[in-house]
Image (cartoon, rainbow, N blue to C red; front, side):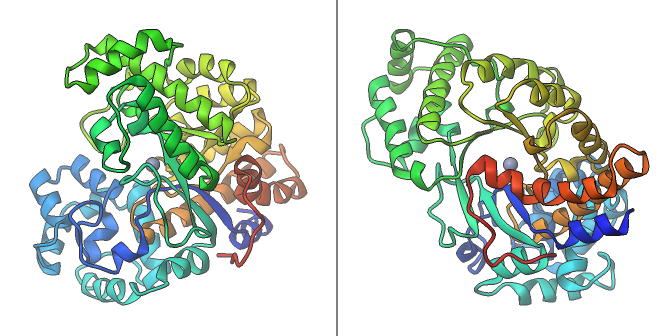
Length: 430
Ligand SMILES: [Zn+2]
């Protein structure tokens, strides 16, 4: 790897464009049974790495006990130890190892280290540790958080944890879920429109973007469905009826486009999950393969919205390169991708930069719930970005100077332009 590029990448702060980090105040308390399931070293595996454990053969009940509040540290080690050698080299396993190296100066999870790691994990959790972990250890200027609890999270640290408006429950629609967050009537389509307006008017001015992960549940072929067609569907749904799949799709099509119109009004980029599914045992790859083609119509019809296509559409990332090259209003976000497949992500950066204008690539989002996990992921991303740019130089496609000039743009400048964020303040290098 080129040492000049490596140095530049290591000292440049990331703007992290996608996380699900829960509030620090939650982590300072007891596990809540929701996204904070246990408070010991096993929590470093919560989410993605646990999926690799399942994929490697760890029985589901054991995974739940491993991530739950009841088993002690030693039992957790006995459950985990047989499967760790199988996943330690994957992007998820690598990120977990790099996290403990950076945070606790421990090299690996072993029979001899897990108790020490647990002590160091607990000792680090204190007021203000989010800022310290993200800025001082991971070299991250700020994160953009998509709350998995709320449409919008009123964070205690808005300069560090910027927030997306999650339109999933507004467009699905999850009527009961939204009514827990506001006291508005919701029995007619017009009332639901007013409820969507309320969320945008209340949170839009403070939001950094809009996010939808609807691609987990359906295709992204959102058609233009008129109010008159959607009105009776909404009324039936609100009165407790179950809609037929085609009716449900039509209502979602209408509501999603309604949310897009609000996003445009507030000047908010729209982030869309594409590609691979988190978890295990439920992904339908034929539908995933249609994400890029399904988006063509939408990005044509809303030319003044910036669509941020997340996770590089893995494993169909070549299609996303074509999409971003062709459409001025499409950018690609590599959030999560570095740990889904680090080697493919290196190839992706090279392919992207040889084909697409460089201002349309966002190179980091940890996509984690636990702040500690972001550290290792940022390290994988820095290593991958360094490798991709070094290889482009070695292969004669870029000069060292050209590669160095791209670094700040790819790591924070593009995010600043796309999301209209202010300049770096109090940011530290890694
Ligand atoms: Zn995510």
